[in-house]
Amino acid sequence: MLKIFVARGSCSLASHIALEEAGADYSAVKLDLAKGAQRADDYLAVNPKGRVPALATDRGVVTETPAILTFIAQSFPDAGLAPLDDPFAFAELQSFMNYLASTVHVAHAHKYRGSRWADDPAAIEAMKAKVPQTMADCFELIETTMFKGPWVMGDRYTIADPYLFTLAGWLEGDGVDPSRFPKVADHRRRMAERDAVKRVMSTFSS
Image 1 (cartoon, rainbow, N blue to C red):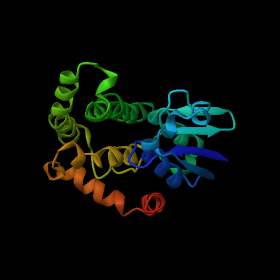
Image 2 (cartoon, one colour):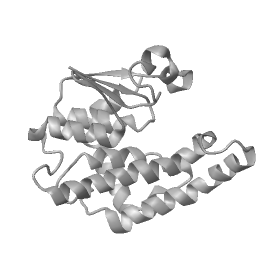
Image 3 (cartoon, rainbow, N blue to C red):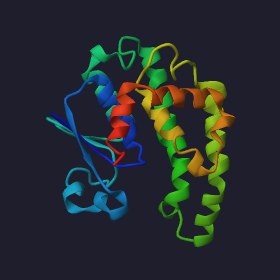
Image 4 (tube, one colour):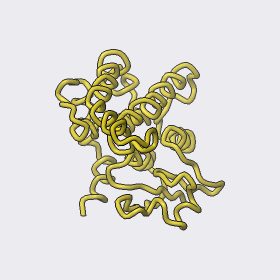
């Protein structure tokens, strides 16, 4: 059985939803990041990076959201969560997910994790102040150029959809009005109506 390590409010939500969409046999372990569970010795033995998500498989542990999502899509091909038979379409999917990981997530992290990039308190505050603009710029590009509709990659629901849903959920907290991006906002609404998403979200309701 697969085991996914997740935390409330983190990017691990995307992988958690994908496992549900795939119909995978898995268990979820919830970590309390506020209490430093990600730095505990028992978790560092799973993922020395001290971050979520991490997916424990019978062959070892997979980390990093794009890699985990791809693993899920390839492990459960009947779920149709990626265009595995089309190299160009699959590359497009990878491009979108890697943009979320390398640019959007990093822009968001400047609000909470500025100490990763600077020690000067003034520099850290400057990074925080920039987050509403950088996040808005990222989602403007997604809204106008990258998002195909009705799902991220077009007519077909893929692993990119729970990933976008997860990061779009950070907009309000980053000082960005989601209504500026109607396509993304509509996508977020439709994602929230999916049974797999409801099941995952219910596990964090208590």
